[in-house]
Image (cartoon, rainbow over all chains, first blue to last red; front, side, top):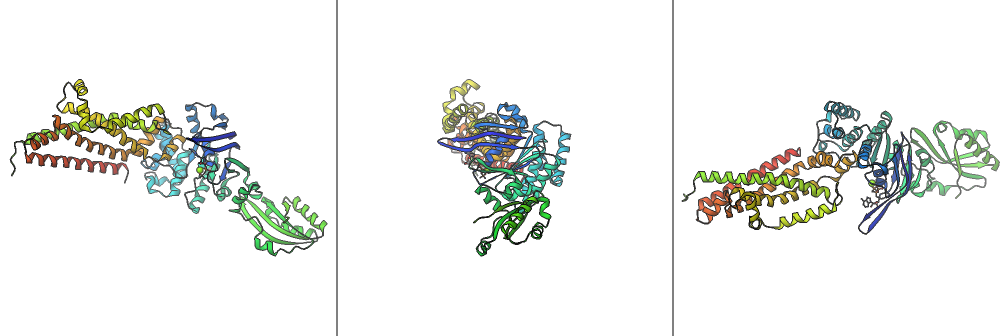
Length: 339
Length: 219
Ligand SMILES: Nc1ncnc2c1ncn2[C@@H]1O[C@H](COP(=O)(O)OP(=O)(O)OP(=O)(O)O)[C@@H](O)[C@H]1O
Ligand SMILES: [Mg+2]
């Protein structure tokens, strides 16, 4: 649905040049809720603004819905933009217009007949739960309500893609939750591909199925949310993951760990169905070993459970080996932890 | 109480003349100044129709005209005024320099009003695929409307001051009365009355402008 091929973006302001993007390759499939996370200045906004060509790439190709944006004329680009909705951190609603008129704007621009506009706007306001606010002005609404209006406005022209640049960053955690749930519904009920820019890992955890981590204009890690959360590779990714799931042995446990000759420590990772099985009990019964759970954490991601455990397994070397094999056979990821 | 030679009719006529000069030059000045103000905003660096050449010509021209005090501008363009209306005295002759005086002033005021619009609004408009004309018409102007009303109010009050000066060269209106009777013939009554009339005009215009702007801002 969205593809970028070695995209570069350099800003030149007088003597200052900023390389905001340095060779981005990216693929967002239809139906994805694709998250992009990174610290401030990583280039996230620049990246998302390339998708609807608010910014032009210095080099490389941006392909949306099979069309190479670089090759489109201004009027073709405007037509393309109607296929892409966008919502913003500060909502960007027109203060001078009612909620109804704000949502109606894309339809007015497209010169739709009055009756059709009225019907569509009320339908959208129903969808976001703000029908009774149609005649209010943005200043009379809370932040969460404003973002709902923003979402309704972005959906008005029936887009295939919705871009969200820090759409929940100005909202409290509870309101963030409700907006994220709404975005999930947008994805499922209207089958709209969503790209979410954020600096909060919890947002990714809540709604995304894929994630790209950005740093200094590059994508340093990319994959399914379950994989990236389970196995972050880059230190920055690890830091982000740490903000939502504890996945390392607490220092106090580490210190009191008795290094006995015939024991080893493993990091065991279990996903989905397997997580609900009494897997530790099963391996203990199968072989002559002792298992000490040093640390365990269970997180819900994408309606799937991710369990991360640190197990100290004591016993004969061969028994330990067999236990590890058994865990792997059951679908767990097992890694020995060597300090 | 005071000795005066001016009749009520003269006062009425002078007031009507002043309103006529202000009204006409405001109307034509707005028709020129508002598009110029919009042009300044959209062609400036980073604007939606960025145009370095156009902007770097228009911008200094407006500054130059703005830097001339009205009284000098009026005298300097007398030949031009004669060419247009055939005479350099009377209300119609005063309107020509008034328009030239007020148009760039309105352009600057409009520019400031439009620049106050949250840039996020324009970003949203661009993300919807709006054309430059649509951005101006459906986003910039409605969002700046309250502020534009206040700008026009300020321009109108500026015009009242300028029309009073136009009186010194026989432009007619309240200013003319003040000069001819109040100043040259020491008619205190004429002087005081013209001051009161001008104060009332300005008060009415300012409070009407404020009220309209409040309404436009949905306060
Ligand atoms: N219009 C611009 N002109 C010049 N430099 C810019 C412009 N926009 C962004 N940059 C620079 O490009 C880099 C990336 O900016 P960008 O806004 O994409 O970061 P971000 O990841 O969205 O950060 P944040 O989380 O703070 O929003 C920064 O160094 C920024 O200063
Ligand atoms: Mg940003």
